[in-house]
Amino acid sequence: MDVLVDVLFIALISFWTISNFLGIPGNSLIALSGLVYGLINKFEAFSFSYILLLFAIVLVVEAIEFLLIVLTSKKYGASKWGISGGIVIGVIGAISGAFVTPIIGALVGSVIGVIVGTFLVEYLHSSDIKRSIRASIGVLIGKLAGLSIKTVGAVTVAVMLASKIV
Image 1 (cartoon, rainbow, N blue to C red):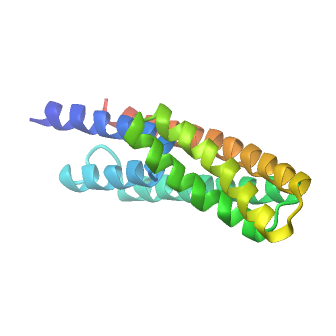
Image 2 (image 1 turned 90 degrees about the vertical axis):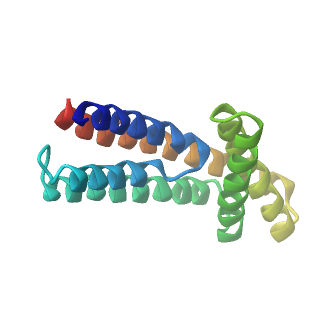
Image 3 (image 1 turned 120 degrees about the vertical axis):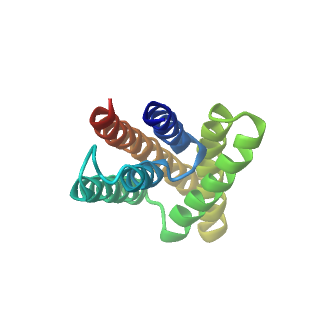
């Protein structure tokens, strides 16, 4: 029974790692899964403080992702409205794309959503096409950089958990 639980847990944290591309908060779900696994096994494989460390890593990674989006967007001239529009439409694009093709569709939908959302909101806000395009590029660069950091964080937390189990 323990082997079955271990295999299911490894499969679950693998899915949560991939789910970052679907717009699902996979890193948080990996850490939460670790907490549930710990509770099921009475923290025999790792301590509760280890879980707290994983949640701390997740929080830092999420903060870095958000900061990358905001800072690169600002550098390229995006307003708060443009950044918000890019993030919101990016999430909507990820969800919509996931229905078309999981993972790839969600990733493409997210990227297209970030570009279109930022452009539209910036254009409505400023009526300047060049500024809107530049802002869209900034949000896109921030989104891709943030997604890269988020993926590295997910793999790190998943490997930290899996290494304690196997």
